[in-house]
Image (cartoon, rainbow, N blue to C red; front, side, top):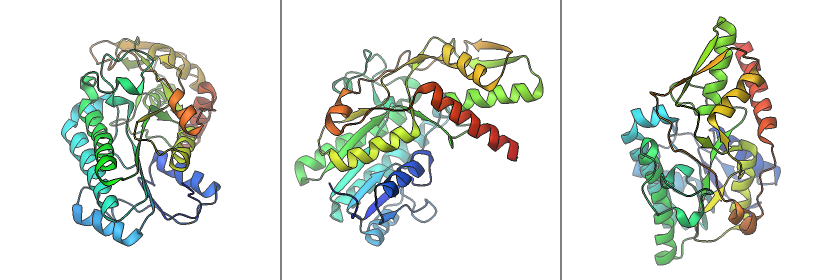
Amino acid sequence: MTIADARILVTGGSGFLGRRVIARLAAIGCTQVRAPRSSEYDLRDPAAVARLLADSRPELVIHLAAVVGGIGANRERPGEFFYDNLMMGAQLMEQARLHGVAKFVATGTICSYPSETPVPFRETDLWNGYPEETNAPYGIAKKMLLVQGQAYRKQYGFNAIHLLPVNLFGPGDNFDPRSAHVIPSLITKCFDAIESGAREVVVWGDGTPTREFLYVDDAAEAVVLAAERYDGAEPVNVGSGQEIAIRDLAALIARLTGFTGALVWDATRPNGQQRRRLDTSRAETAFGFQARTGFEDGLQRMIAWYREERARV
């Protein structure tokens, strides 16, 4: 799809990834990009979604809006995570079909994979079991958009694609302690400890699980490349292909923030899925995406940004 001259609707455009996707679209010459706020159009409301499509008349929809959070938030609000994510995506895709949208880009999640998926995760493993319990409602809700897109492709010829990104990180991430993912949570804890003079930081779990992370600007590039170049029915992993143990991650963040105290592991808290690493070969083959930002380099940029933000408060 040639998108430079297309009318493009981006949901979640004010969010962490959405802002980067909009910037990337602008960089390649897209001038007809609309990214309304949820206060204008509540995507859980069918009438609001129909009004949004009628008002914007998009040729391409990039659906990034989501209710997201770390393990704690997923455990506390599983119903909300399931309902809101399912309703937003399902209704938006239906109205996109009804309004003749040429292409729909859905962003799923690595949380959709079964809890015992062999490493590296391959797209063909997606249906081989139930997701890890702590974020299963969220993962299943997002996976339903893959089912919907494939069903609509088969019945209506609707061009819906589905991306499966890993956890993102970078400047502008969510640092709210009630919903932050592991990297911003650890960065905040280290800075809080430095400022208060605390000699230890408590970290959830035992530190043995591994996770894969992708710098947010790289993720934005992947979304735009897929919108331009990929029209397949099969889902596509989007990640760096690298994993790091949470224990090593915490030590690295402590070093980069300057925290020299002890990391104390609270094994009464959940670990989540034991390992996560994607096979990213399909993304490279299908639309030429490879992550370009080194993990430590990305962390340094994120920590520098957060240090400046704290100084402003």
